[in-house]
Image 1 (tube, rainbow, N blue to C red):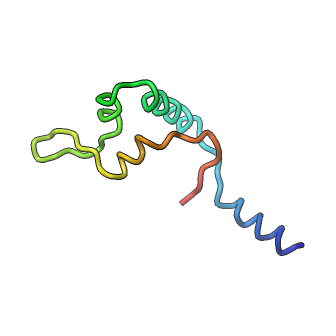
Image 2: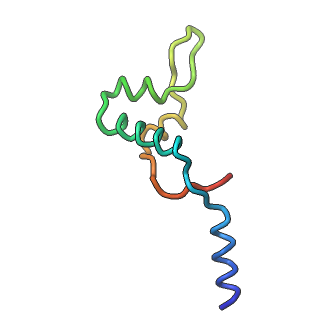
Image 3: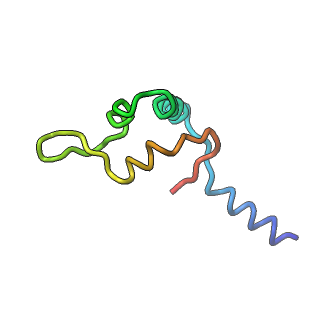
Length: 77
């Protein structure tokens, strides 16, 4: 029983609570994801530029624009 308790406590050490700034940014991004036009979503989430300076969306940007922000706890890396 003690080993199970220790293992569960070790898993909890990798979790942290989102900061206020993270929650505000996450709420803003969720509104963009759910209510904005596709052009606006692309504008907000595209982080790369091509040779002419036009915005590009990487694969990770695309996944970020599809995945809603979770208000729960975040994993530390």
